[in-house]
Image 1 (cartoon, rainbow, N blue to C red):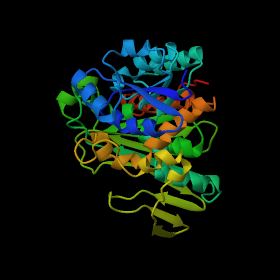
Image 2: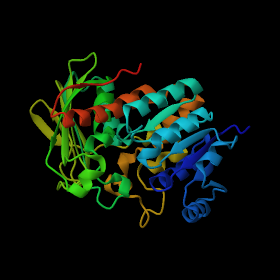
Image 3: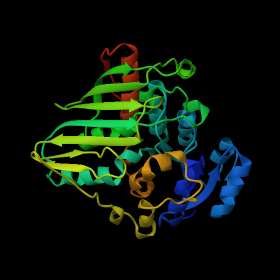
Length: 367
């Protein structure tokens, strides 16, 4: 058996960004790639020099040389593919969201417990340089007591694959929810959410979800904190933004309005724009460069999520490193299966509340 963890990467749109990261990580071998389209699979395999390729996910899981699977497949497949990989004895990293129903989140958790393998939802928002900067302030006592937080993720999804069309905004809310809950180090317990505006009927009919925007207030478990989250996907004019604001008694932080600006840090009533540092020093030297550059045909073939999200704040190598080190060190990754379920169900329960005209919905407890 190889001393390195052998990774299979499934889904090669956004997923291709991770190929050179795993190829250069000191503890991994990018052993195989998988995609349904044979032409694309072989083109990417040749480009990156990956000889083992699968168009069948079932056959990929039968390969005994694969230790871990990183899923970047359509969201409707996340639960099914995660469960299958766990029960096949593979560690699983899966792009967001964990699943599209509370029942599927619970089934993934049960599969992880039955298998004893690692499961990590690959949430970019808690490994961006902005998040790592606020986490540094929090951990060093410079924020003080957090009083309130606000998250937003507004994005125009026209032109994305058809399964995105009409998706309820809060069903893909983890980018806005996760940094708030992670900084509070708490889980969401209760949510009130209102839908606002209307999208075209052809979009609304697909998921029976009419709202252009959904805005939620969450009460956190075992905490005096409440946090606010706003999410939109279609027919709402706004430059792409994945943002969070933090208000604490010593220091507060507000995200910039436009991409070319800098965020603002407040000390009391005095605010100033700041330059967020990079945190590549937290990574093995071989993958540090991937916090500041795309890794796959950057000029022509970047995935829409990478271009619109400004490279996801340098998060990709941090995500891969955390997943790998959780296996090497035999510990739970961050986020682990319980946290991933809570962050995902926060959005699912928020949408349920919006459909009930703002009635409170209590999140399930998974621990």
